[in-house]
Image (cartoon, helix red, strand yellow):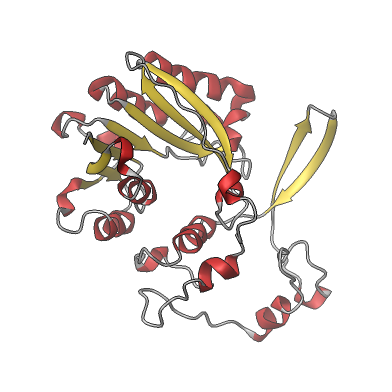
Length: 296
């Protein structure tokens, strides 16, 4: 059986690694050998869930300070490079933002190790950032590193995930390897129950599950929740004025080229959404560090 040694940049809590080690091994087995992230709690979560017996595999530092020369050679690379400057929720500075150029660290790793393949993930806003310049430069960087690339926008709800979350995932295969990649079909997931209720209750979360703490809500919040129906949120539900939220939302304009309509969309988002997806998607299989827990 082919063994693929996996390296990770921007590894986060280990979602990509978890999927990799539990993937069908018909074409080979994936073994994480090193991972990097800058957040200490996130690194602790990764160690607990992915490599509890070899915690030194996780290097906790700024990726710009990571010494690639000290790392083991790899056959595969995974990286969800920061989306802060590409997200539609925000100013979408793209390559001009604080984090926009960090993809170059992944390109450096590709050039140094020349793994057989890589998987990169980012928000859909990457496609439009800097009027399309960001996409061309980033994908061009992957090609220049020696890879055939296969980008595709995936709608996670089409693949059985209980959240409307759309992401661009780029699969790269080294140019000398005579294989291509096709996005998996969503057909097996048609009709699947992807409600959050099903994800959280089937199987039910154990009473003694790590970080499973009930929230303490104020009377006003309890009353507000009574007016929010399934599929709604605090911003689109018909809530009496005295229970409505009054927060400053992120505002942006987006040109719908197909219909040539200009519309304004008001969005409100927090980092908790990512944690919620992990808890919902993993059905509490992965116990999270305290500051990565979400109670639903």
